[in-house]
Image (cartoon, rainbow over all chains, first blue to last red; front, side, top):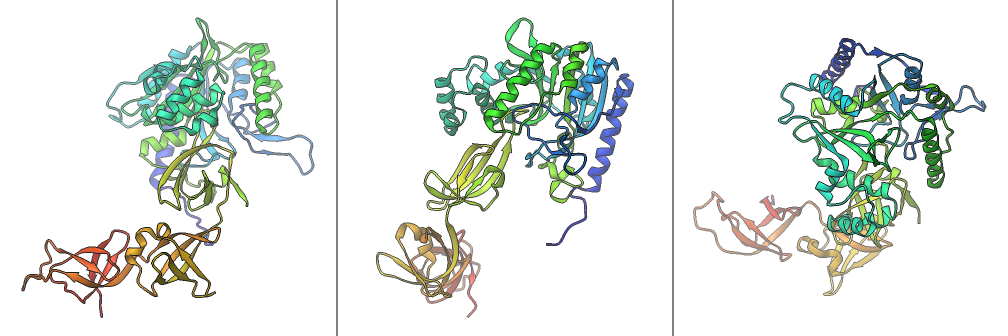
Length: 325
Length: 189
């Protein structure tokens, strides 16, 4: 096999990436948000039930496992707990097995936290930043903020917050996805993941930025529960042209709740036969000491570059995608 | 038989789906946020040619299909079966009407084609992209018309009917694209 040494993307894209990074740094500099760095190689890893990670060790035969981060979230929250105030970071994250049109196992994230912001204020922030990063006139319509349950109902006719297996099964069949019936069985979250990704997502953000918020409480991740509605959590996802671009939360501060979510996720991982993980005790200790009231979000910069350059595959915006890294 | 996990799925892989051998056309990862990952896969059913789309949970496996494609020589049709021979091993295979399907329109004795075998039985026949066949029937063209505009139907020696230019006559050999069923040119003799 002839090995190709050349970049997969055009030189134009390499320049475009540099401009994007520069524009992001300008934005946060002007907003007085501090740039930080946290380790990529970590002692602990997230317990997300569906994320696979790369692990290694310091030296051959060492007992302690080290992990390539799937997200810088825990470390950044430790900084917030230590009193940095609002912070941002541009970093690499790694997810094992994620390779495809929109996925490369190694990818670049912009993650930021705004102290004192609630979810609506964070969405305002996203809107402002993206309006500066996307080419003028990119959108024909204003940014849209929609509740998960509303957009889910619009495209499926189903109630996302109340699981009704026979109705979900019926609709899946009508939409031509009868395999979902056995695949999702009685797992509400799998049903939501399936229907949202197969039926809803492609419609989001076609004419303007689309932010979906008030996620069902069964998809909480690290978001806090909504005060006036226990069925939803303060989580937002950002979509442009049907591409999922980011995921953010009004951050959970309650250490007890965080601890029990970790435990639930570890159990779920066990049940699914996923690789074993331990809770990040340093992160829990930081929550215990007190995380300031804040909202935070991560935006995938490779996908943002795909959107800016109208690329069809993530490989078209990476100098060296995994196949020739 | 071996099986393949979704992480090994790629175009061209032959797998069993609902009891039929299928070939993967396209495989895409669908992953909502930090949620369950799925593989959305487009298959071609190798028996019927139909395209099917199906989603799997990432990590699921499918049984491999024992499918091979071999270059074979078409021998003859006995009225019920079409007979083929592997020119290297001289092994002979008989394929029924449903396996040969539309390919029979292009099969001339001794012609080479690709036979798809599932568990050693022929399930489909792919003729060469271009074949040269003799015209056995067509209306005589108008004298002096060499433009070819419009064209006329012509029956070929295999029974296929294609549109040919007006100037092409009975007894001539023509080159046809079997994928579209369209006339390409007169065959050089």
